[in-house]
Length: 518
Image 1 (cartoon, rainbow, N blue to C red):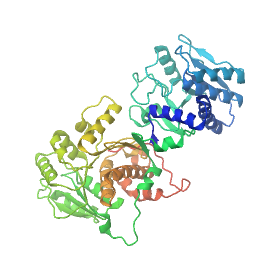
Image 2: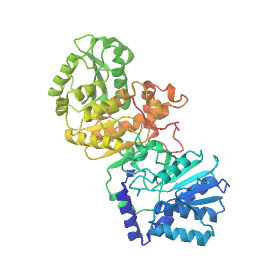
Image 3: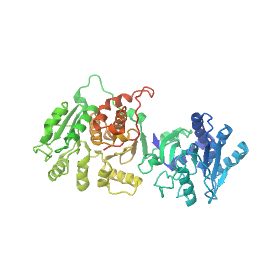
Image 4: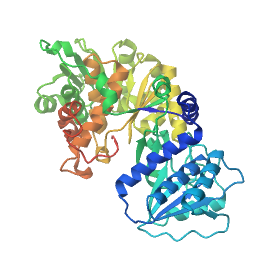
């Protein structure tokens, strides 16, 4: 699903009215009717008190259309206009007049100094104060009103975007934003729904199709795309009947140090379970017995040293190399990694301490093959790209970094984001139970296993992140967030593959939320 920017949404509105021969007022009526249908379907006429707070722009116009339709259908509605400016949109004014004409009810005008209306905890608030057109922090009295709404305890439904939240930058005042229980977003989700600093302003969201011009939606390229099941299905490569293990590549997993051999075991097992034909682990000598015992399906090569990797030399010819998990940052290991990078020409998936070594010596980044996949958590990312002032700055810096070195970066966390030099892909699978030791090692192994099978590195990163989160969601069943461990994620990779081809009613339903990887 594409995530359109605010200017693109305005352009879509304009093109829709031109091509469909309708007015912007008619388009507003259509959009707000979808909000009404959503509420009406769930409430079925229940006489819960509904308080609709409208601004004086087009978002407020949506709120007035909704109020009119709810009143006509017999709902218990109080409507308020937050009089925050002398300027009013034409569509707001038209719907203000129509509400008075059609319902004989007059919205209550709220101005500076007015008390917050009485709202019960069992009531519903509809937030239609500000939409995506907001360009500055609201006035102090409006902020006070919004904080009052947040503190009522009533359930809040926001129209299109929680009021006070900008679609493309951080709010100037974190307290000047409505905290919605549900946001009903027109045609496309908003990028701010998926970033750590802004995602908490809406607990849930849903996209409502308001019939914007299909040709424009299909043909317009966006900087961000939401990745779900329908987006990854075309990536999937089916297996041929007469295939053999050599057809699915040989993955080399390089890492481990004394006490951290488990990271290599997890990555190797994940690569095999994701479908790599062969996997070899390269570890210090201390990892030999445990790997051969715990993972008999993998082959093992050891360094000459007992407790750390001091050279990376092998006689096999792998398709792809996953490197860094548990490897440590000792002096000898740093020298070994630098020597390896100077000689290596194979595709790489780089994680953990290999990233930290590169963050400390950025000359090593120039040695990475184009389209290498880096899988940092936020701390590792900061060492690579530098400090950022907010999540938007983080994405900008990461994309500039990806473009400079021609890399693919997966920023691990809730809604893991895969960044290429030209696009960003936001994942929808995963849950907080995945915030556990080894989860990131599993992801690195999965991406390595996909590249091994012939997936393009960007496809492997996007698909691997989706499968990783989907497996984590399935692992939740009967466990709960606290009990999920990295091995559980590996154990559900197969089910995640199977779920790709099930109809919605057949799918195993996880208790999932958002992806967080260690």
